[in-house]
Amino acid sequence: MEQISVVTTVVDARSVADVLAAAAVAGRLAACAQVGGQVDSTYWWQSNVETTAEWSVQFKTAPDRVDALVAQLRANHPYEVPEILVTTVGSGNPEYAAWVVEHTRP
Image (cartoon, rainbow, N blue to C red; front, side):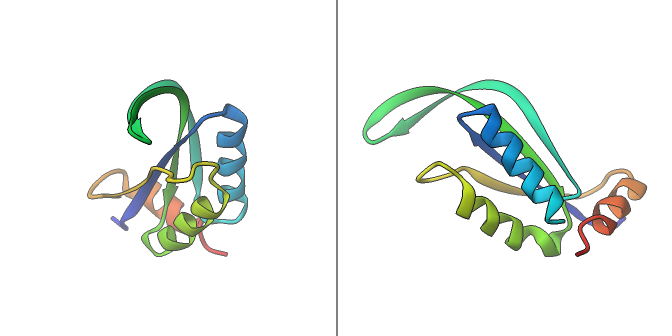
């Protein structure tokens, strides 16, 4: 199986999540982007505990496209310190992995 990566972020508006997802797929930085439903995040920010409603976005991409995807997310993310996490998928459907790699080629 070809390896794939999942890049995850959260934002404070569904519309922002949709824009990040569409831009990554249109630019072939991700083969697929999934916007998840609202989650409530509790975290430390500027010496206070905050709770905020957020939307998660998961991007499926090829390992060689991760750096460019992360750079695009950082450039367009509304947060001062955005959560951007990268996970390498160790196993899964080989046909899906091949599809992800094929659809992240410019």
